[in-house]
Length: 275
Length: 133
Image (cartoon, rainbow over all chains, first blue to last red; front, side, top):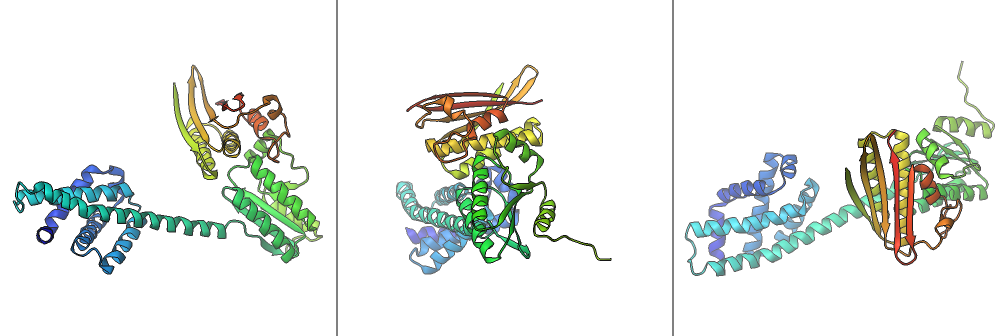
């Protein structure tokens, strides 16, 4: 029974794939189909069917598991949603069964048995695909998390005694902790006297962000350096005033450039143009 | 006419999602950059309060169209511990978590209209409106 189905699928592979591609396109969201180019779609579909065949012929094959992993990775990278892949599998079963019935490969009385067997084959396959898909996602997310952490709060020594910490993006509790650590460690290591925290790239300064910055500045003061808050955009200045946050302890400027000039002044230096 | 969209607040990243939603709606309604910043900051405060004190809740954004006025309403709902003394939390500098204590009074100043309804043990319902000028 099993071999019968496999040979049946093998014989009519291209026909089945065409049918499958059409049905999948019909059933899934147009937006998904539109972002995928036709060639890529058909090529990936072929791979998908090959994979299904491979799993049917020998599901303990090591080649199969590596292929499945590669396929899942590819699908995740392409941005195909999982529902699309799972629906694809279901449609494939449906098409194969219909073709089997149409070509009268199977007896009318045994139809139920065949359908059940196809289902039994597909269940582990779809489980595996979902599992691999999910773990590929998890891997991607955790890698991105690490990548994000790496660029999260660098302290850059610009000139002697002056360092800058440019902050870009949202500040959450975890990042606030890193800001504090990097700031204090960097101030000591670079022997900075003035540290400029640049918040040009921070979209929202709410009380929590302000609180973390105030705490960081206080800690910097304790290790003997001064903190300056630069890159305060006009709208941020207004919200800070509305919130009633007191930043009197800081020197604040609108741009990093002005902050830099002030910092040089504070360390008794200035920029001069060469004659 | 009111159109509402909501974000469920469960973790810190949902705060960012709520903020993003608010910013997009504010932009669509035609608020300027300063008011956009005010609205997103207010959302950030309210969503963070849900995350910090109630653990989970909902933050909804409503577009308001009344006669000749257009506005945006932020609704923050939770079934958390509630607030025992509302007058106290509306004072500047009062915080139970070691924060700045500027959140709720700040939101009231950032927005045009502010209503808070809370009972201990039942949760909190905060509604704030910003009108388009």
